[in-house]
Amino acid sequence: MTRSALLVGATGLVGHQLLARLLRDPLYDRVTVLARRPLDVAHPTLDVRVVDFDALEASDVPAVDDVYCALGSTIRAAGSQQAFRQVDQHYVVAVARLAHAAGAQRIAVVSSVGAKAGARNFYLGVKGDMEEEVKAVGFERVEIFRPSFITGPRPDRRLAEKLGFAAASALSPAMRGSARAYRPVPAGRLAAAMIASLREGTGATPKGGASVRTYEDIVHLTEPA
Image (cartoon, rainbow, N blue to C red):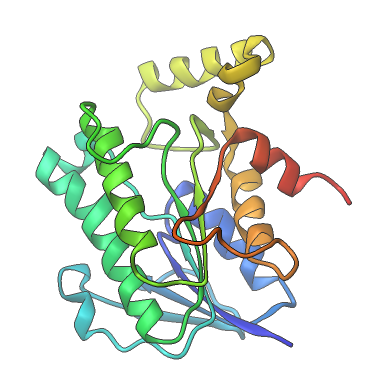
C-alpha cells in the first residue's frame, strides 16, 4: 500500500536529499512540499504548496501519512535568537500540528546532538523545546534525529565553517565511545535514515516519548540488509 508524504525544508541541505529520495521511493504516491517559494523541480508525484509559515494554520494541506521535517537555520542566518527560535521551534511545531490534523501519524524531524529542553545553551535549548512540543502533538510514531555535523555542499558556508567541517571529518575515526555521537553525518545518509525510520517494521514510538536517533542509529538504519 502506498503512502503520502509531507516535506518541509526541501531547499536545505538535508531537505534536498529527502526530496530526491522521496520522489523515487515507490512507497510514496504523493509528496507534498510546503515552501516559501516555488521549487525548480517537476515530478508526477510532487505537489508544491507555497505557504506563509507565519500563518501556517491557514494553509491548505491534503491528507498525509508521513511527515519529514528538515527545517533549520542558524542564529547568524536568522538574524537574532528570537528569529532562530521562530524557525527551529515554532515553525516546526506548527508544521507538526498541521500535518497531524491532516491525518499524519508518523513524523521524522531533524534536531541536534545534545538537545535538551531548558538547556543553558540557547541553541540546544531551542532544539530540546521543539522536541518536547512535537512529542506532545499526538503522533503514533515520532522519530527525532540528533546529528552533530551534517556534511554536504553548502555554497554559502564561510571559510572558517568549511575548515571546521574538514577538521571534524578528519577526526571522525578517533571519536569513539560516547564521542561517536559527534561524528559527522553526510546529508544523504541522514535523509536515507529518516525515510527508513518511518517504514513498516521499524517499531512504534515508545509510549509517552519518541525514538531518539543519534549517529549509531543513523548508521544502522542505512546499512545494507
